[in-house]
Image 1 (spheres, one colour):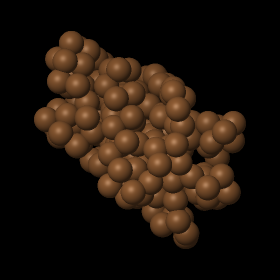
Image 2 (cartoon, one colour; image 1 turned 30 degrees about the horizontal axis):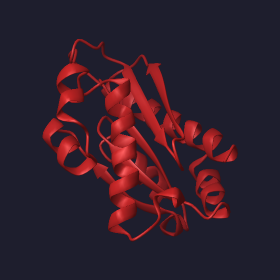
Image 3 (cartoon, one colour; image 1 turned 90 degrees about the vertical axis):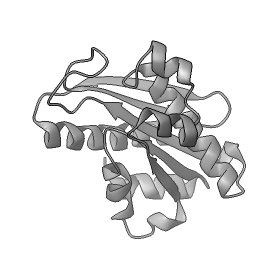
Image 4 (cartoon, one colour; image 1 turned 90 degrees about the horizontal axis):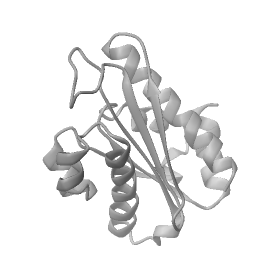
Length: 164
């Protein structure tokens, strides 16, 4: 599934999209922004590489970062929820009208928080208590892992939005 199909599906449902990116460093939002009309659905993206920024801008619990590590299912979910809540509030939107996606992982060259290179978590948050986290283990160099994470995030978002 493509980014253009995602933008159209979100638009048709009257929703907006918020992103919280770590591993992908803005590449996910860049791929979505490449789509003509993306401004009708994309609220923005917080690129939070440092743990302090994850806490401050995406409302990730310092306890989760300390106990689980920045590359974890829990932090991925908190990043998505934080992007959803904070960007909806910043734009004066009801949180129920905003879906969110987060990316966190290890692109290499070294382990992080005991997690192997290629470990990726993609978090999704939607209306109400709707949420999902997807774990991936990609093989490749740093750029390949990041690119595969972007593609996987768009695929998961497309699948998810089609069920809303």
